[in-house]
Length: 383
Image 1 (spheres, rainbow, N blue to C red):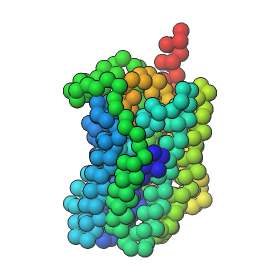
Image 2 (image 1 turned 90 degrees about the vertical axis):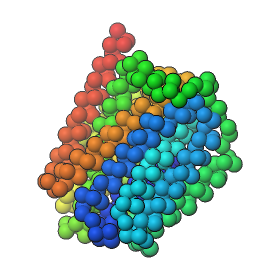
Image 3 (image 1 turned 30 degrees about the vertical axis):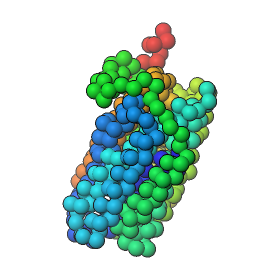
C-alpha cells in the first residue's frame, strides 16, 4: 500500500524538475510551464473532493484499481504531448492524472482501518512515508529519465508503472466494503455536516492547507532557480537534489509514533517553527546550494510533522467516516498547494528568489497562527 501511494502521489510531481525542459521543447513561457504545477494541484484537489468520498459508499479495492488505471491514462496522454509538441495535450494529461491519482488518498484511511487498535498513527505514518518518499523520489527519477530519454519519457514510464502496480494490488488487497453504504448525494452533503460539527477538522485542515501552500511555493519555483544563471543545473541534477528531501519524509514515520503517544500538539508546533527556519535557509540558498539543500530538508521534514499530526487528529474525530474526513482535510490541503504554487510563480516572476523566499516565510507565519488557533480550540474543549 505504501508503494502504491508513493507511485500515485508522485505522478503529480513529475513535472517539477522538468519545467525548464518543457519551456525549451514546447516553446512556452516560464509562467505556462509553472502553471502545470498548479493544474496538478487543482485537479488533485477536485479528485479529493468528488472522488475520495466514494470510499465510504463503494467497495474500496475496486475503486482504488479503477482510479489508478485512469491516472495511468492521464500520464499516457502527457507522454503523447511530448511527441506531438502540444502544450494543450500536456495540460489535459496533467489534469486527468491529477484527478484520478487520488487513489492514494483512498488507500491511506484503509491503512488506518486495517491497523490494530492503538497503532493507527503508526500505520498511517508508514503508508504516508511511502507516499511522501514517492513524491520526493519522483522528482529524482523524473530528472534521471529526462536526462536519458527526454522529459516525455518520464510520463511513459509513469503510465506503465502505475498500470502494473494496479495489477499487483488487484491480487494483494482484500476487499473493503463500506460499513454503512449511503448514496453519493448523502455523502457529499455530509462533508459540510462534518465541517460544522468538528471545529478541529476546520483548524487542522487549515494548518495542512497553509503548510502545504508554504512548501508549494518552493516546489513551483525550485527548478527555475536551479536551472537559472546562478546554478545552471541539468534536469538530472535538479532531480537528484530532491533526494535530500527523502530524509525529511522519514519524519512521517516518527510523527506517527509520536501521535500514538499523544504528542500531536508538540509535534505540530515544532513543525510550524521548523517551517520558518527552513525558509530562512532557503533564502540563503539563493546563492548557496548547501543552504538550499538544508532548507529543502528542513521544510520537507516540517511538512511531514504537520501532516501526520493533522491526520491522526482528524481520523479520530469520526472513525466511521474516515474517507469523508480525509476528503475534507486533503481537499483543503491541496487547494492550499494550488494557492501556494500560484503565489510562488507570481513571486518568482515579479521579485525573483528574494520575493519567493519572502512569500514562503509569510505563509509559514500564517501556518504558525493556525497552529496557535488549534491549540486554543483544544484548550477550550477541555475546560
